[in-house]
Length: 291
Image (cartoon, rainbow, N blue to C red):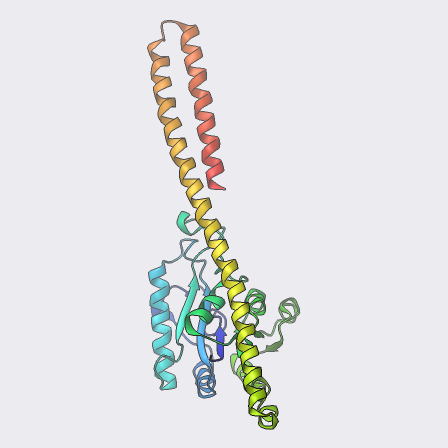
């Protein structure tokens, strides 16, 4: 299993600005490409894990996100001279305060939850114990910590640094890479390994793999359970909408009967009241469905 560096995108690899969904305006932060090249040369696999709630908010589409990632990958490869410098891009388009209904909800991939990181570890067979997360916000750090990674916050904001409580902080991506490489020998325990008998090294590696596997299994089990719960809630919501549609049809029929009884005011009032009551129930169901 290989170690990896999980990278946030906006504010870490590219400026955190309003151009997040525009491929033609993608630009790297200073020193990004050389820093990524150093990580690759050191044997780390590189993965981007980014929240893209702008999809849920209607600012851009998933197609725009994919196009931005294609452009970003192209720029990085041109400057590093490598192919697929960043091996994979994971993103979460969901947000609980969105305006696009199919994306307006919480999701286990949305940081500070570790869903994207755990999914990448499973897909790519990564060793979490030797991996790092580099991001610019406390939610990045929280996701990395939950997944069992060592974390670096890239920020000059003292309040943000204190809030994130990352393992390390750096003013720039280049400084973050220096921290990773400085601790690489500690991560691999090269000196201790040289003095440790081969059977002991084999046992230690097996224990680390088992611990990583168990952590990954627990995380994926939680992830699966959350996805199942989301599907159940969506199924329940669909049933509520069907019920509301049926009641709306009944309300229309009752209103029609009320108008047929215009000559008899008491009957008209009775049917009209019934229609109003049914309409009120329909509105209540629809409001409940939106929650």
